[in-house]
Figure 1 (tube, rainbow, N blue to C red):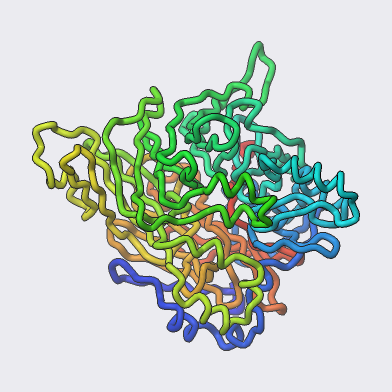
Figure 2 (figure 1 turned 180 degrees about the vertical axis):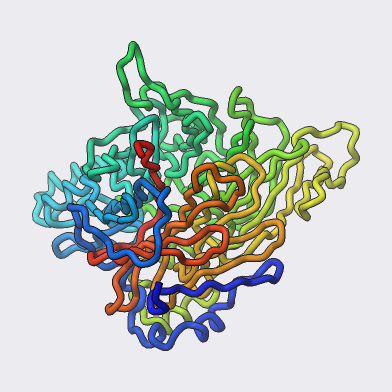
Length: 563
């Protein structure tokens, strides 16, 4: 592999590494990046489809065992006609894939043909409301048509622009976001096969795009019932892997099972959640102080405010942690709580010696969403850095929850007995446990693990380094035991969420490769798919793509089992 294409691997050996401050990080950026008037324009630039397989230019060596498809999802279209979205999370879903076949890689991309996509493109303008963009009736409509449109929005009917992730229920794959709609897609052709409404199977308005899977392929997920469905509550459900009946295959969702529901502490301000944790026996629901104002949501259309503005962080509240037996649906009676924080992604969770250990990525405030408004991303580099100099960096934190509590234990006792953590759970007079975290690492988002170690004690996690801004500029591998980390960086590229793919018959946790789609900042260099050896975190191959490639969010690898 030529030096021209090689990224840089950095081995850092210090303990918990604080995120580089904004000003220092800016100084470390290349002069080419600093001089770029709007270096973030690739985020919100309209992309085009590559509907037919395009063979990539591979340099380096792809492992012979790596056969299958990396399927990714993210926003790829930000304007329709003369109208444009206001927030990066609003862009219409563009699904792309990288298929590995006998050492070659083929690229393909197609827009998700959701009802939202069809309506917008037919009208040649944005007519469906998204997270940060409120859509209104055509100004050419008469007063009766406008009034009818307003009445229809008294209870929001959410978009089906599923741009966050690709999830699997049974044998079916779905593009998903955080609403009650998901769209089934063909993982090989990327065709949209049809829309499914969760509410045909369970009463909820919202559902996460980050389900968990057990060793048998059963999926577990959570959602919120907040409007028109009684008292607001969190709903936990299971989708069995096998939905066959009398030899006939059915969609797995037809056999969906409700595990339990947990009423939110506040009726008007239910907690927002993007993901959850799972161990062998428990589901972990973190009821954070980042909340949804349901009254404001119900009246958003009339107030001319977007849905994103209905989310607020209550820094004076606490975080309440619920442990649910995933087999019985019983919620443990112990109240676990911590100081207020904002989080989006769990890393992993497991049980050890009568404790539940869970790791997640937290923020001190909710400013992250605001930074992704297009008007903020359109600023030149210097102004963007200055505006966001107080950006709260993500912190990878560990919490430990003792499961069994001796009633004779005196108050103010730390009940965490594990020797390899500084996290605490102190018994209060009322029987609750006040939990404090241990910081594992600072400045990392979009975490990934070897999923064979999901719900199990693990050593390594991977992610996108977030230093000078909320946008990733490096990849990192973190060793929880040694507290060391290794970085990969390419000064001309922005890598996506790293995906770990285990090698066949792997013995050690980090036996495998890391895959990441890298968008190029340099117009003279094409975007590429990066392949790293997960153990050494060195680049072993890259596949350059002579096509438009967008910055994505989440996805999964589908192993080809036919070879």
